Image (cartoon, rainbow, N blue to C red; front, top):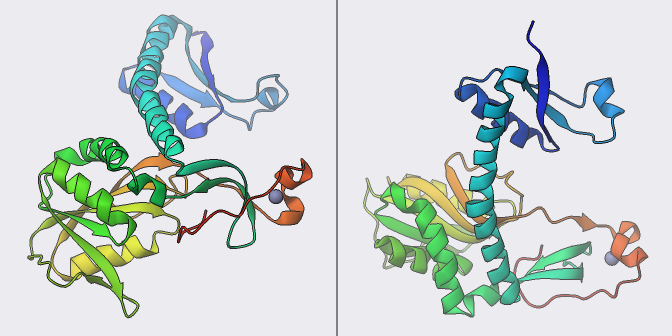
Length: 268
Ligand SMILES: [Zn+2]
């Protein structure tokens, strides 16, 4: 009978499932023992255990290390770089903020601060364009106002045309003077998505003109990756900002002074 061994423990079920699938794709029998097990609930380190046959241990460990190496060297570095640019420009603030909704939060995005520095726009859009470069779009479509500078820069990097949309009498429209043709392939660029409402409207608008939407590129996804446009979506930063009722706010309880941030038109 085969002996089994825990090769790694995960706190995140998606990460655990990806690791299990990766091992199975490489011919290693693997399964997960999750928090439903009483034994694990009572253990010191609670988590999802990735279990393999003992004979496969060395190979499994090596395969898992190869995932870790890639994540560390590429995605983590890139994420730190992006966060660094946003913090440096004053766009991503940490503290204690009163939002327009009246709720309190420990994070705030002052998106307009990014656009103030064309060099930072260029740096961020280079990463975004790289992630979208295999799609070969004919056109990049930005959403006014925030998506104009970003979309323009992405279009420049991808060597495509650029247009933007704007709301006219409440309805999403392509800015007059721009032309799109049926059969064109487009990428949509927006700065921050909270509910995604405007982006959904632009997708519908472009479809109604016979334009195929290949992907969405975002500066910040405020839903923490929950938003689903039904097509490839690339966000430079994906965060889940917690908002508290004043009476439940842990920052208030710690006596941290609160600030009401400035004039951005989208609060987090
Ligand atoms: Zn508070």
